[in-house]
Amino acid sequence: MPNPVIETSDISKVYRMGTEEIHALQSVTITIQRGEYVAFMGPSGSGKSTLMNIVGCLDTPSSGSYILNGKNVSNMTDNQLADVRNREIGFVFQSFNLLPRATALDNVALPLIYAGYGKSERQEKAREALRSVGLAERALHKPNELSGGQRQRVAIARALVNDPSIILADEPTGALDSKTSHEIMDLFEALYVKGNTIIMVTHEEDIARYAHRVVRLRDGLIESDLINQDVASHQDLIGK
Ligand SMILES: Nc1ncnc2c1ncn2[C@@H]1O[C@H](COP(=O)(O)OP(=O)(O)O)[C@@H](O)[C@H]1O
Ligand SMILES: [Mg+2]
Image: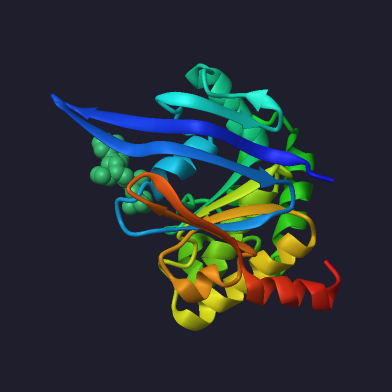
């Protein structure tokens, strides 16, 4: 039963730099169902970050429509967009983006302040999220007392804590060594199996291989959009 969480229709994005116009996205039409795990790939400058920013409600398209969870967000004001973003999207970045002076627990609890939860509920939910990424024992550590992989786990716990509709990860393994990258991909796989919708941007073929669908961009257009056969047969085996 299809249950689209993302539906873009012919979206474009034009950046104006003085008199120059940069067509970062030309015309992108894509539907992503709830529970999918999708990788966006493509060369530098192909529009991956621009598309992620629009999908993540950090920016709006210049034309075309974007329906998120049945709601047309293409023409929302910045405040409305921030509200949707806080409720619907969990972000994971290459550089972790943690507050350096805050503990892991406080970093994870941060989105819950905006969501209006009281302190004890925030702590409880943040502890649970840290537990789900295997970091319960590190709750009171600060980022500089954690390894890169552990920092990214904290960031993933923060992305999950609000129970978002989508997890958006922009180069989530870009700052990690190869072994740690695969550990983080194992964690994403576990989140996917639990039913989360995941969209990640990556340059790396061996990271994209974890996703079940790979969308390749070129010059602001979708060049290909393919189900990952390796993963598909693996999913048959595990009965997903
Ligand atoms: N804020 C901006 N202002 C002007 N041009 C931009 C801006 N962001 C991106 N671009 C341009 O849009 C194109 C697509 O960029 P981007 O989406 O960052 O690509 P990718 O993430 O695939 O490397 C590039 O030509 C880039 O230079
Ligand atoms: Mg980019």
